Length: 314
Image 1: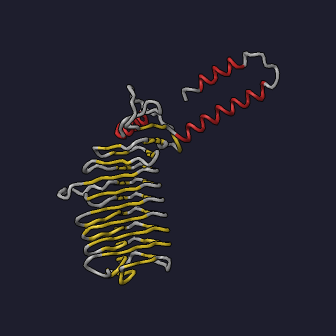
Image 2: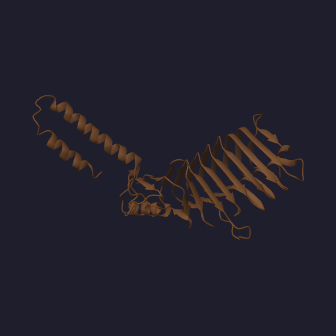
Image 3: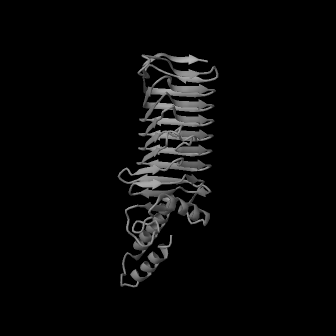
């Protein structure tokens, strides 16, 4: 709070003026104002800005002098947290907010080991280069109001998710993620993920898996999941808990397509709609495949199209 001394200086100059009445109430008001301002800064943490179209000689990450790449902003976040310039909440560094004000291209993977909140202004597009994406390890990532895209070559042998979480927390709010080739869209390990008003789309020549999770949790509300390829699977859960509410899933495949495959996992569904379409088959055998250790709650509010059965045990 470097501006606080300036405010105090202003107060001293202010009270040099001849005001004989009501000094104490005014003083209390300004003290309360400064205290509230400091609380606001502490709770909201550090704020940085990214604008590729900005014309500035010095890139400071401020509103007037924003960074011109997401990589710059993330590097600044790590640097300032390392120098303890970011706010602290419950003994840990508070999330640093990065406002993106234009479309950005990110060539390399974005590695996050500190909490970050990415907020889009006017729904900017974050386009990743080949084999690039968000790698979140032992921290949190929240994305609000952005579109994330990545396209890979069909001949690319590596499988790299656009979002990878390890011992992490990932929250997507009003986010659109689209991947073309490259394998699994999202991989979670010992992590939790929430999707609100979010869409996730994967278009693959071979197998399309939207979210592969192990020892994790997923919650989706008012979201849409779409996958296309030779085979497609929305959710592959191993020792994972999932909750789907008011959510749609669309599978357009040549052969096998499933809503979920469960291994020692559980999934609860409310107002879920899932459709399977194929040019070769009229119907698929089951929407959900689960082992005996798994639990799947599929009430009447779940609408399935193109499946012969709701659940098959293996």
